Amino acid sequence: MDTYQELWQNVLLYCKEQTNQTAYNLWFAPIEMTEFNGSEATLKFANEFKKNTVVGRYGKLIEEAFEVICGFEVKINFYCPEDEMSQKQKTEISFADFKNETFTFDNFIVGPSNRFAYAAAKAIAADPAGQISNGAKYYNYNPLFIYGSSGLGKTHLLNAISYEVSRNYPEMRITYVKAENFANEFIESLGKKTVDEFHNKYRNNIDLFLVDDVQFIAGKTQTEEEFFHTFNSLVDNGKQIVLTSDRPPKEIKSLTERLCSRFESGLLADVQSPEFETRCAIIKRKAQLLDFEIEDDNVVEYIAQNIKTNIRQLEGITKRLQAICKFSEQTPTISLAQSAIKAVQNDVRPIGDVLKIIVEEVSRTTGISVEDIYSKKQTSDVSIARKMCFYIIREVTDMSFKAIGEKFGKDHSTVMYNVEKFEEKMKNDSALEYQVSDIINNVKE
Image: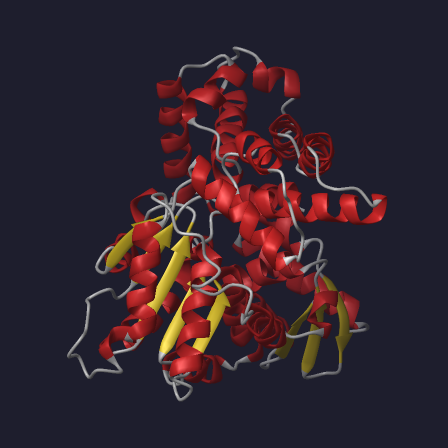
């Protein structure tokens, strides 16, 4: 062929014929082939999300297309600008940052909302999967599955387990990974043909496996399959697994039944929003760590009364108040606490803004106007766009079915039914699934 771009156009045409117009426009058309040397091609993607999705879903199709067009096997390098640092490096840096002496059992404020999860985590740290006592003290807490909303201390408990085990049993091999990084690293290993190295890392060199936000692997078919076998390999070899999630296994949408069963086979422990007394204790402990004295208990109580759900926000407000007092050379007062709360809350995107972005993204993707999505129209295309909104809102926010229904003039049972129907439709429509993934990625950016 005259140019490698002509080759690339033929490859794209082959892929288009093997898929459909929607999938082609969404995933194949934006790819650039930046290099071809006769036996090796480099494909460039806009971002890591798009690259990982294409490699996971269509990597083999692209390889097949090159082989059919060229008449011989071509090595494909899948690339995006974020690849200047490999996923493996990102994971290792993440783990280095994770082992933080600030987040230990001693620094974890225990209350009724988290006492059970704390006790379970302490038991794991004392004897992970019975590996220390050879089963004499073994509690069947494998896996330990800690769940609860964001900012309630799940990652703190993971860090505390890691810190305690590494201090008391330095010979134990500990691996911490965010589920999203696990997925990305696995997809990267497929693209680079280093799956054996990946298997060796996650199946043969671990005594304690800590996985944060495991809900992110749900719906990713190949990643779920890989995680299932990794899970079985570690448990079968007597290794300890601790998982965190924002919801219990049965509520993780698109999670396969067999993984759900594995997650429920150990011990489930939830963490809930802290009570008033616990919130006050958290604020005081954070102030102590900052070497920041709050003499007036009314200031502590004012913050605790106004921030009721999120530990991370409590700590952020305490840190902001310390900065305000330091730079203004004032002692902490309720008035200054009000300023700190306002500043931190303004940093959090209001739910109304998130809803607006979701509906606008769905409108842009489907071609259905925002007005029609909110209308009472029941035509097929409008109905699908509306269901897509319901589903995505449930995925990226904590809104209840009732709250979503109020925004769209529907009752909670209607929203619930539409979400379930949309999930069923996605299972049989990969192009629709990719559209939803793309929208969720855009909303989270």
